Length: 103
Image (cartoon, rainbow, N blue to C red; front, side, top):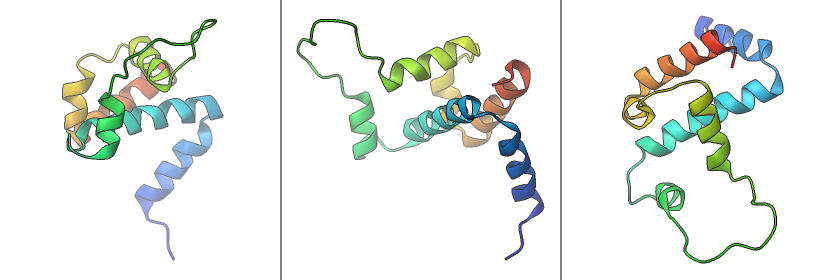
C-alpha cells in the first residue's frame, strides 16, 4: 500500500508535534466533529446534556469540556460553533492556531 502525498505531509506534521499539542489538536478536531453531528445522535445528546444535581465537596473535577474551552480561549478562536459547522473552515482554523501559537 502506497502512502499518498497528502498522507505523508500529515504524518510529517504529526511527528513534529509533542504529545500535549497532539492532544489539543485532537480535542479541537473532536469538538468540531461533535458540533457537526445531528442533534438526535447520542454523542451530541451526551455532549450538550447538562445534568442537574449537586457535586461532591472538594476540588472541582477538571472536565473534558473545560480543557477544550481553555484551548479555544487561549488560541483566540472566535465563533467556533459557526466555524466548526463547515469542515474545511474548521480545519483551516485549527491549522492557523497550530502555526500561529505553536499548538
